Image (cartoon, rainbow, N blue to C red; front, side, top):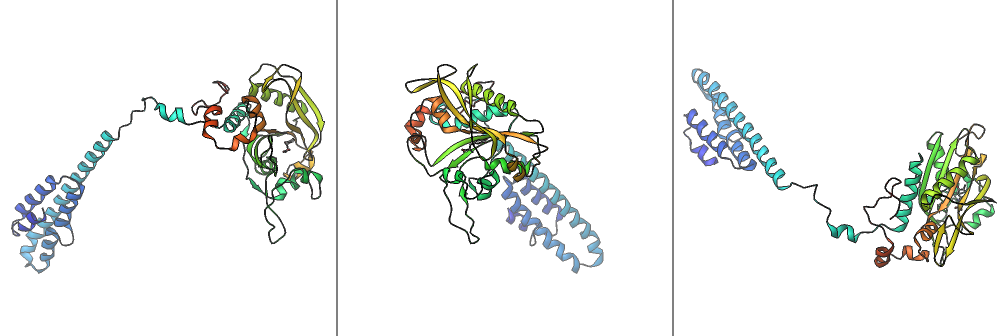
Length: 369
Ligand code: DAH
């Protein structure tokens, strides 16, 4: 193409223009068009070379050639720009035609029949769906915690016996003598939440927790869901109602018998453990009938010192907190006898106990199937 232009008689601007415009029109793609542009308007292009001769021309000749060459330059530039837009449109059309996706096609069977949601993820999704329906927001915190958030701010000072009960995994001591820990519960996120959002607070906190313990019902890493509600007039009645409502929704029953036993946690006052009535038949569990009891966690009214650590005035605010062990609830609801199998990563186990990925738990659509 470049050859055709240089072969054009230099004195004949009209035929030069015809030749360049023919090349522009004939460019099959953007690369070819760019080659035409460089050969005509580039630094060493035919038109640019011709412009350079203007300076040495006698004045009367320049008067004619100057506007003629500038006109040529403009027209060629316009033609190239128009052709470029045309080629871009054509390229886009071609791409859209080949990349067409039919979003109405059914999902390929293979993908959904292979994948499974782990029962723990399922139970976390179920619980957060229930809490979300009650107006709770989800809050999260780090797995690696400071001693302050995991213990001190929760009213568990150094030397407090509760520290031993937690079988904590400690990191190596830092230079200043402090040690990070793997959080032993989700309660530190209570403090982090109080520090970041103003009451009224209504959060649900799912997460991994760690304790140095392992047998049929304990693993070194397990899961908790924490609930925290803080407002000016939050009281024990709200706590009892909320726990009952969540248990009924989670176990998908209309009625549930409840029992609150006095207990002790440093971060609540008063503190209670909650049991719900059930019947155990072999490995299966029926909620809402029978004379057995199933523990569903610890709870209580947030201790004034904990409020103060979280930056809130306990004379102005009060609230309740509730900590639930997820793994055990999952075992009970879905009939899995050994906690350790949760973490084996055995694909056959997951196919058996896992959930369909597209069955997202919701109160309207059903929690489990
Ligand atoms: N953090 C406690 C634990 O892991 C559980 C707990 C008890 C959480 C009472 C609470 C609560 O929020 O009020 O053993």
